Amino acid sequence: MALPHLPGNSFADLTQTKFHVSQTLGYQNGYIIPTRPTLGLGGKPLQYNQLSEADLDELAKTKPTLTYGSRSKPAPVEFTPAHVAFDKKVLCFTAYFKQTVHESPNEYYRVRTVKIYYYLEDDSISVTEPPVENSGIPQGKLIKRQRLPKNDLGDCWHWKDFNLDIDVTFYGKTFHVCNCNQWTAEFLASEGIDVNPPVEPAHDPYTESRRPLKHTFDTPNSWDKLKKFIELDRKVLRFYAVWDDRDSAFGEMRPFVVHYYLVDDTVEVREVNQPNDGRDPFPVLICRQKLPKNRKDIPANFPTCVLETGQDEVKEWLTPKDFGVGKTTNVLGRRMLVYNCDEFTKAFYRQNFAVTDFAPVQVKAPKAQVLEKVLPPYNGFGSLEDSKQSCLSLIPQPPKKDYIKMLENDGRILRYAAILDSPKPEDENRKFIIFYRLSDDMITIYEPPQRNAGILGGKFLERTRVAKPGSSIDNPLYYAPQDFVIGRTIEIFKHKFILTDADEYVLKYAERHADTFPKETLDSLKKKHSKIPAENTDEKQ
Image (cartoon, rainbow, N blue to C red; front, side, top):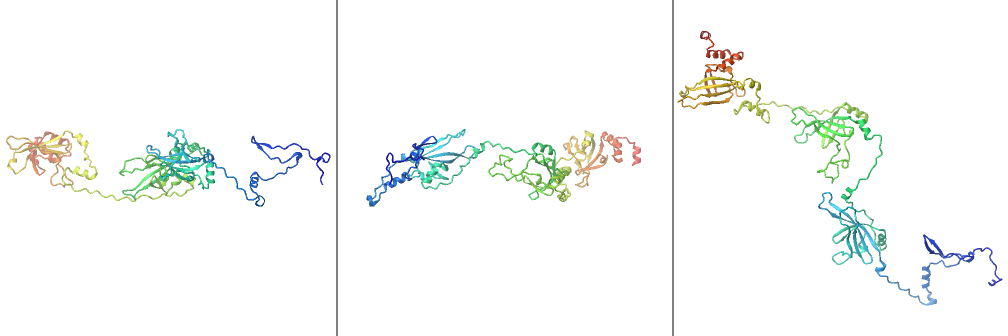
């Protein structure tokens, strides 16, 4: 039996030294937080119920039926209106739409990013476009806060209709929802909606093209541009190649010289002009430049009709590895077969690529048989020389003239008197003067007018070269001053003329060129001008 707790009947516990009251308030991050005391006066542990407040409330409502009768009904849940429960709770979605651009040649469409806000308190929606600096587009609120119709049946958009990676249409404008904030994702997940994974918004090509390029820094190596210039300047690989284009219509095998400049990896193709090849002597086929290995391997959207390909479009350039004796290299669509190279090129390939076989390739085609030119027979139209010129060239050239002979005999004309040898009585007394031009060997016949002759005088024959009767048409023999003998009959275009006299200048010309005139012609001229005595003449006859 325990002693009563009365003065004099209790004993002090000498082990207890703490008699202060435990603290019930604490501080955490600057805020006062109440705490439950665990020790009482003297440091004794306090005996208290370990159940939570919620468990205690549940036990308070539960009453045994046998002891206290039937179970009491729980208190009704308090009604909270939507404008109070969802006050300042907004779903935020990130979306974009594409706007077609018709007036600009630099862009076809423009990607515009917007924010879609869904207000849970009244199911209203607003669409706002964040402003972009220097965009030149009116931005801000695109659709003010309101309930947006979903279809023609009177339904409006609800938060259950939203998700990621879907399209929503507001007043005919389609927006693609690509992302949302964390609270929106948690709210939709708590309501039983499977949220799709977020997607990246579409990129605007024009905006991407205007962004400044990021600066890249390459670690310099020992083989820099300056050292390459010092080591490889004026060192050129020379290849002898042919372009075999005989597969196409009118194609042929043409020789070229390919120069590869090691200092900057550029290529130059020069033509090898041959005599009478029918081409203009143009020296360069392809000027010095870097050549792509495949000029068609470029992006499909690159405008090749207005821009040239550069470093960004070409994936691979021609290098010395692409050339070699016996290799066929595609040079801007032309198949170049390298059949030989010079000594410097051979030494370069031995040192850098360990190539030792430089046997030249035989590419010379057999010479075509040259057909002999056969001139057609002379048809009688025009002069023989003009007809030959039309057969020798596609564009007829005038016959070549003996300009030295024309200069030496300019203005020198031999004149002869003649009568017409004709059986007709009316031609008996007709007289003619024959002019022989020494500069071009042409003959002109003039008939002096006579009174009461009944024949008009004047020019009887235009200036022309006259062939001797009986000569061939293709190789005619023309009259020369040596053929004009006084007293002899000459036939000119089927008209026979008897030479009766000659000018004294004819005799002087014949004496100066006595080595070219026959003795008969010279004697007839001297006799006519009485420079040979009559006795000597009779003896010779």
